[in-house]
Length: 167
Ligand SMILES: [Zn+2]
Ligand SMILES: [Zn+2]
Image (cartoon, rainbow, N blue to C red):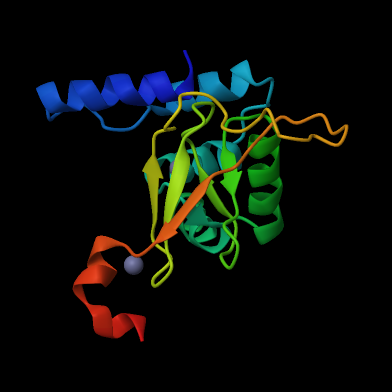
C-alpha cells in the first residue's frame, strides 16, 4: 500500500477511535524499507519515524529527533539514511529557495507547498490540476522532463495577524 494511503487510513481511523495510533507502526516502517529493497536498520527506522512525525523538518531537526530516539548516531549516518530514503522514494526532499532542505513522507501524490515569506512556515496543498503541472512545456528544448515543481509564496495566517513581524 502506498505510504500516502496508509497515512490516510490511519488518519480516518484516528477520528473514529482516539486510542488507535496516529502513526505507522514500526512493522509498517519495516515493510516500507523491505518494499524499497532497503536493509532494515535502526537508523533507517528512526529517520523514517522522525520524517513521518515531523513533516517538512530540516536535516538538523531530524538529527535531533533521531538522537532522542537512538541515543547515539553520527551526523553522517543520518545524512546517508536521508539520501537512501529519498533515492528509494520513501521520503521526498523539498528545497524552497532561501530555505534549507526539508523532508516529508507524503510522497507520490504530486502535492505542492505554501511557503511563508516571513517565517518560512510550510504547508501542504493538494495539486490543483491533479497531475504534474506544466510537464508539457511550451518548449522542452530536448530535455526529458519528469517533474514540475510548484511553490506558492505568501504570508501565513500567523504572520498576517502580526504585521509588525514582517518589517
Ligand atoms: Zn509566517
Ligand atoms: Zn509536503
